[in-house]
Image (cartoon, rainbow, N blue to C red):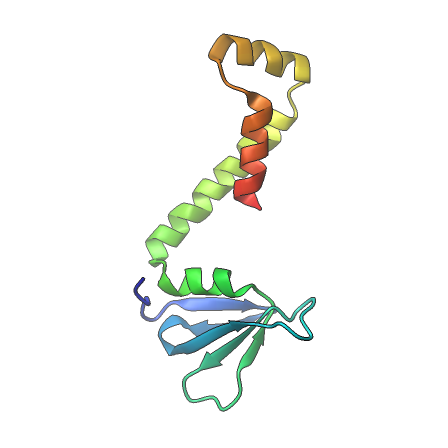
Length: 117
């Protein structure tokens, strides 16, 4: 993993930091709750910022190139739309489609939910 330079990383609730200014990210274990997921240490600041996003999401934003992040966002959007469309298809039609294609649409829907979180 390589830190990307100059990217704005959202911490939640309108707070942003530059990716190359982040020194450390730590999950909050005590007092964790809505709006309190991670502590983010930023170069030049004596105290960490409290972020409402999970540490893994913040680190992903720090190391993922902007063009790749945009592509991933578009892919998630397409998957979300496809999932909504598939969920709108009746179980009987899904079964017939599954017999035609060999695809288990119930399993596919479950996998899409797992990917989207």
